[in-house]
Amino acid sequence: MFSKILVANRGEIALRVIRACKEMGVRTVAIYSEPDENSPHVHLADESVCVGPAPSSQSYLNIPSIISAAEITDVDAIHPGYGFLAENAHFAEICESCQIKFIGPSAQSIRGMGDKMAARETVRKLGIPIVPGTQEAIKDKDDALKVAKKIKYPVIIKAAAGGGGRGMRVCHNEVRLVSALMTAQHEAEQAFGNSAVYIEKYIEKPKHIEIQLLADTHGNTTYLYERDCTIQRRHQKLIEEAPSPVVDWKLRKKMGEAAVKLARAVNYVNAGTIEFLLDEDGKFYFIEMNTRVQVEHGVTELITGIDIVKEQIRIAAGERLSIRKQDKIPLRGHAMECRINAEDPFNDFSPSPGKIEKFNLPGGPGVRVDSHAYAGYKVLPYYDSMIGKLMTFGRNRGEAISVMQRALEEFIIEPIKTTIPIHKEIMKNPIFRRGQMYTDFIQRTMGEWTQKGEIK
Ligand code: ADP
Image (tube, rainbow, N blue to C red; front, side, top):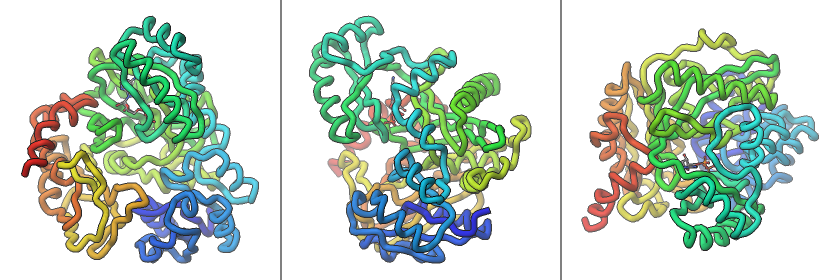
């Protein structure tokens, strides 16, 4: 096992990794940007190093500075968390060349799955269903029109290097497709440094279902069942739950086995997630693979009892998965997660940074909160707006929702605006309670409610 790990991240995920390390008896090094000097992850770690000023490009994405911090503190490994450098193949390579273990998959795996178009091709060859669409980058507008005509409107333009729900455009007709193509290519170049875009059939009324995987270096690959991340806003997840209210054991097995097949085919090692869309007929289609721990990993931990972050660390240290037999992986009860973001749901979810004066955490049976915030904490405008994840557990979905409702009532964060009010409203919604929602739920069902708030 490693004796010291550097955590190349901030916020709740840095805390999450440090906590896992402490329980495993591994020492930790936190990195921080200048304004994060007083963040809890800095205090919780055994050592800490400032890696630069506020902008991420100069601190949490500053590879030379992070590698120097790792060398000075003499760590054996780096855990990247999610976001920042977690899916940066170049960073993984540099770590390895400096004899520092990157707690994640190989650079080759990151590259192979990071290019969504290349990943689609790999998946297609394995006979796993992908959303109908192009196999190559769109050359020009005639090419785009030809593809769209073949797969039929609506279609969605996506960046090959895309992520975080950015750069996608839904097109219902030719006029829109032609105008969206140019802007999509330009935006992809600006955001990801790669202008390649591709076109997929836009699946109407889908559910987002993803499979959590674990794979070690001894050839063991297992799936920890599915998460349902259908509640999204602008293609970004807002609520996640496990198991999915619409997946039965037959489908679970089919999707889990497809995910394992893909992971094995690309020699995948680490925790990973295969994302699928599930259509109204119960057919599933691969959309992408995330080669890191995800924000929503906690709901899977609650239903399986498996600590995904500790598994990641053990895998990187060359150990075996703690449960290697698929049929021995527990699935008990139901877990739900609400992302608490510093955003104003009544004002188009605009960021609401600032100092938190009052902070009351929920507690009691069935509640887990992963957050780095506290009374007096300043939500900084430079980084992600997520200030915490509220997770609840119950024997069944109804119970997980009841616990969530009372936990949301207890959770007080003032005076900044947060997503707590919209979560309270969603928990009451009959469509959500019946589990009959699609990815357009917020837009379609909550639109009027968010408008009402604006008038208030
Ligand atoms: P990103 O990598 O930016 O997160 P994904 O490919 O994972 O993008 O897609 C994010 C979300 O966008 C999905 O969960 C879904 O809601 C929507 N989406 C993506 N592709 C399609 C599609 N072909 N049809 C309908 N919705 C889609």
